[in-house]
Length: 188
Image (tube, rainbow, N blue to C red; front, side):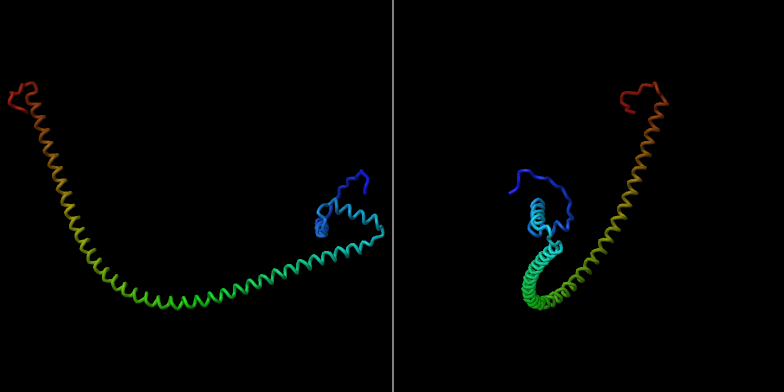
């Protein structure tokens, strides 16, 4: 159809225009350019306004198809919504039944709660009495602990005094006769 020689061309096309060309079914820029140049060569007096109208008609067809698709999707969504509404209505009826059952259970639980509260109050009184007894016992134990601490201090002081007396006695013996030999029966 064409000679073996080819002319390479490079051009930039506005993105909006290219999208319109893609809508017409051209998947590569090479095919679109070749097709456009063939039409231009075949009919040099081709009305540019007519081309624009054809493109506009094609765009409108595409928009119409999109709207029809959108309408079908909307109708399917409406049907889905209606089925969901029916499901929700049945759920509502079930929930009303459940609420009535729950209210009767709530009344039963309220009476049970009142009984438990009375029982808890009695237990609380018993615990308060036990707490008072425990506090009293703790005070008694604290007093005994203080007495034991005083006794311990007393014994410690007594021990220190005893040790001081012993040290004093040892020092006196060393001063009195440092070189004197002790008889064998004396330990000090």
